[in-house]
Image (cartoon, rainbow, N blue to C red):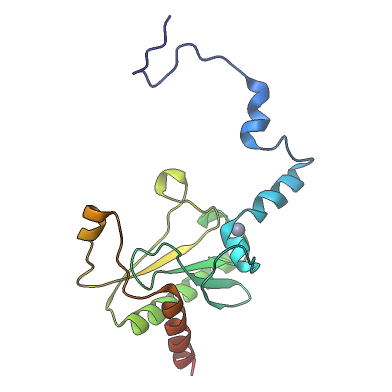
Length: 183
Ligand SMILES: [Zn+2]
């Protein structure tokens, strides 16, 4: 039977089970532990936590358990991310103590973002899994300040997102406001 280019399934598919290791990238590593160590090194958020000089980072603060930093590709100016320092991929995988601590970090971050950006409105959430928009496999919560006017039409007509503040300025602003809130 001939391949139908419009069909989502190739009728001439054949089994190459020995390629499973290649697909899972495990063949390149001597052991599962080594595979996990090396793939973890590629995690952008772990790199930010480890202060890898090759990964741009706008850290706002960190505790023993959590780090707050700016999204390099913000939805709006002030888009903050919070991650556990420990590498967890999914919410339900995290120990209860981390989940409890996380909710307090979210509370602190909302206060910070609202005070610093002088807005009343924030989107809070996370994307888990590749079909849900989860691009980095290290659990992180988005805190996105929202404003009454966001100039979004530019995105549609020019594929560009105007930002009213540079990442450096937002980082500085957040650190200043945080110091004032902590007093
Ligand atoms: Zn990680």
